[in-house]
Image (cartoon, rainbow, N blue to C red; front, side, top):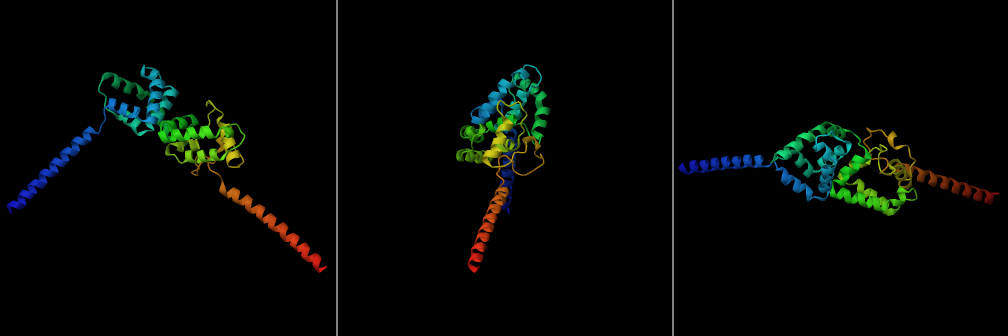
Length: 255
């Protein structure tokens, strides 16, 4: 009986010790901001997003209104796991607390932008560049699709780079992004060229797409059913002409 009680006491003490450790661990999960900053800086994607944030949001940190550049930088930064930790980290000095308070002015606009079904292609590009894998895939796309950008042809390497890019999780916004006319490149022209040259489709205007359409992006996904229909029509036409030729040959022999 005494041994049973001893075992029960040991088990109870073990449970108390375990719960104490778990509580302390939960308290320590809030990362210090300096640690979160270093963790982000050492990551390729997050590091570049952090740099954009520090330069793009400098006026905001000095007390000015939240600019569009700062909004984009914050969207890109918070799209990464390390960036999210920067937003919830524990400050260790007054400067850190002051910076966090001033950036709060951007919270509502950033939240609204992130909740939209479709974002601008500029924001989508920033989000992709904040992720190392997506950034690499986007770099290959820009490298191998130059002929397509110029409206000449869509090479096999270009199609392959498009397929790789669309498989990246952080490229999801690129698949449905909107050209707002403020890009440093011909956004609408490139989407038109991709649609026509890479997938052989008729272009219907990038902004005319139904934003509630849950299918994969029209410009980044070939319509195989349309291609299949056109091939089938061609085959049927050839079979008809062949049948007609055989009919005339046989009829000539009978005559």
